[in-house]
Length: 418
Ligand SMILES: [Mn+2]
Image (tube, rainbow, N blue to C red):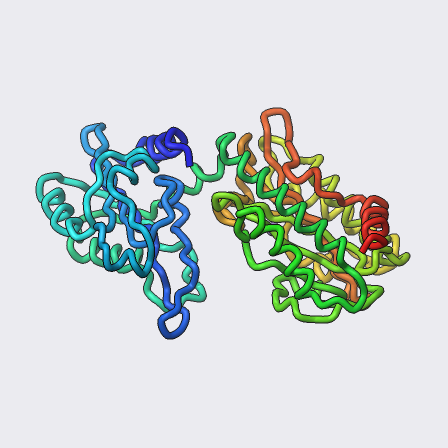
């Protein structure tokens, strides 16, 4: 990542820190999956935003007093024996080149460093990056262990969550960040085309997932989240990700997928006919969702909220289903559209953003209306990633086809060749 961009991120963060405060960010750790195997490492995204480093168990410390900020990065020591197993360890000089920080110390020096600095300075507040979502957790993260130590050793500190500063910062994207999302969208497009090219009745959802994964891995990207490849009635389940059913010939395939570049996520949903041609009712439902997607995108401008955009989409969805005699009243729409219009997108596929907060230029959001008609076994969602600009919006996923005729023509042409 560019040093300049990272420096600028740190400066923006430090500016928002209170006078007489410290910020302590843990980079996250490697978790055991089973026996001596590990889950792939996921850097803490706030730590990554400030340092660009994807290395476990590092610490970033910023200390602000009298308007001056001192920042220190705590890193591993070189260890030849360990390197034979887990690979190369960067030197301090190399780490400085990567993140632009010159003040680098070793992790085993951290406790003493903090104790002596706390004794010398009268800090009042500490910003800590404990995980925001704790709903499903059964383990204690290293961020929480560190937070516990700080709270116990320095009980006089006022503890704040670093997200207080990070959420609004990360919501507004720099051109460099938008560029990464554009690249991720291009790779996602390739993956979706690959899926449509090989799709046919009788194929397993897994094969479609493999086609998508091929393009992502081949392009040197990663997944924003586990792909959802849901055919037929599986599409009625919003987070279906077993992807292991046989695709029926006359069914629709809903693919909610995203590649990530430098951890910047694309998040796109396309719904296509398994065999290359929509039947009459599938096309009718599809056209309603497409219109809702387009109308919602047209609403986007500075000052509008996600809740208001959702209203634009709901109008179209309601009108469409009423014309098809699927529902009568607006209240019934919740049975057919049971999620919200979208979310903020960035280093996390679901970046934090308040739904009632007015949008600002530089934000990237998803627009993803859907209809799930259980009695017909049809689920359709169409999702794009959109940058809010000073003059309106820029659809970062505009090259990914969504017109029904275009999808049919592409699939019929490409499938003949297979
Ligand atoms: Mn999404």
